[in-house]
Image 1 (cartoon, rainbow, N blue to C red):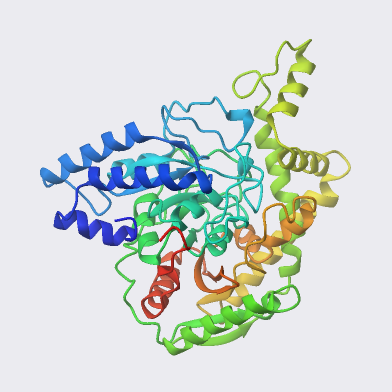
Image 2 (image 1 turned 180 degrees about the vertical axis):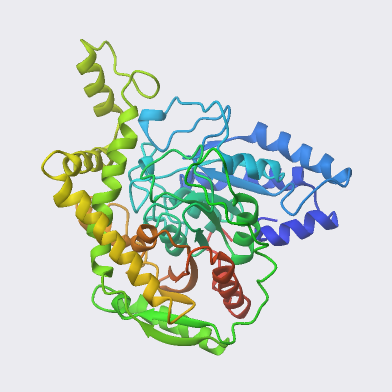
Length: 484
């Protein structure tokens, strides 16, 4: 059963080939057997999972079920889950048990899904390699010497290793798409506001967005249909109606215009990754798409703008972790200042502290206009670049990452090199657009991902294009050795 996609498992449950409890028991056993090599989970929840599986089987017996009833899921440990630890991969929240469910969790629970546990992540979603977690790094199942990408690396590694068919993630600057690419799976970052952020612990509030990771675009369409929609508790939630994302998957690609930004195919892109991406573009041509060149002239400014805006918002969002109300509290503080400083120094890791300091500095008197305001102006220019590009094309395509997964520790002493791993993804978050990564090849046995970017609320178009590609190729069906 572990080799089947979410859609295939749904058909098996509907046909009575197995029960949700049998499926859940099989996957829990697989997590226990294999996750020691990956460290992709922070918390496994067998009691909750089996209770939900039994409830799903009972609902099916009564004829009360939907497309996702009884199917397994894991949540990135940034989504609050009632009665279950929500740590954000940080010592700061190691003992925090959420008193409520995030909207995403509640929606998937209401759809009848079975939560197997909470996945590992970069601390407070700050990282591109899943090495900053207080619970230790996650390993890439394609090569356990390599990183899985971040910050949703635990979710991506677990799905790639067939520990379960799908998981949730969050994307602030590429944190769904980048690990999806490095782990050879499909990951979708929806339009900003498409999926509620309520109960999703904030890193950078104007950039964060939840989304699905799975092996196929069809599975992502299934999940997005349940996750998306307006939420009155989230002031940034979009009121746009939620379409049936599965309904348009089979449409042909004749006449689809795919734009290739010349800025994405220059210096810095690995030659092996470029060849795989170009071969994938050729496949899209064979499927009927027209390919045109477009330009995103401010693309090179995305990284510096992002690494001002995101740390500024993080500095504000993480100010609440002071050792007073919740989170880590130092032992025997001498006074209030000592309580604040030691609690935060002990509770936050090096990368989180680095970004808080950068953000606080950029927001300080005398520097706000020079850094934060200027970065927001560049953000607008980037948004306008995409608007003009979409006058000439329906989707934009390019590499998801400049290279394949790098080795654990390889960039640990060079934060800037680590930040550049997101060079093709951060602009999408700055513009609030939807984007998807799907596997298109490999280099030295490590996967390569292609990124598709769409206009706002064009998730259905992205999913359709990726699905048609996956019907014609088998990269999404390849499994890492030892985890097949």
